[in-house]
Amino acid sequence: MVVVSDWDQFISHTVVHDAANRALMAVERKRGFAAEWRRLAYETWIARHWSLDQALQYSLDKTRLGYGIVGIHSGAELLFGVPLSQLDTDEAAVLACFVTRPQLCDPVRCRNWIDEER
Image (cartoon, rainbow, N blue to C red; front, side, top):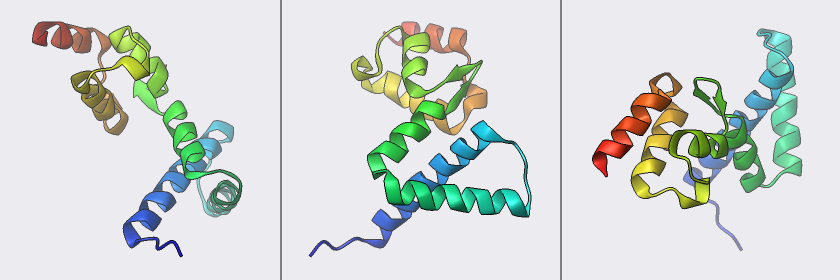
C-alpha cells in the first residue's frame, strides 16, 4: 500500500492547478464564475489524464520569465546560452528566481552578473 502524505497531495494539487490555469490562460483571459468552472474542468481533466511530471512539464514550458521569454528551456538558452540540462547550480537558482518573480528577469543584467561571478 502506498501512503500519500499531505505534502505530496498539496504539491500534486498545486502543480495540477497551475497547469490548468496556464492552459486556460492560453485560451482566454476572462474571469468570473464561468471561468472558474472551466478552470475546475481543466484541473479535473489534467488530474485524470496526465501524470504529475507531465503537468509540471507543461506548467514549466508555459511559464513566462519576462522580456518575452516563455518556458524554462528557452530561459536557459537565452539567458545562459546552454541547454537546461547543462545549467550549473548558480544558473539554475537564478532561473528558479525568475520563475517565481519574472519582473526581475533582465537578460542583460543576468548575463553580466553570471559573468562577474565566474
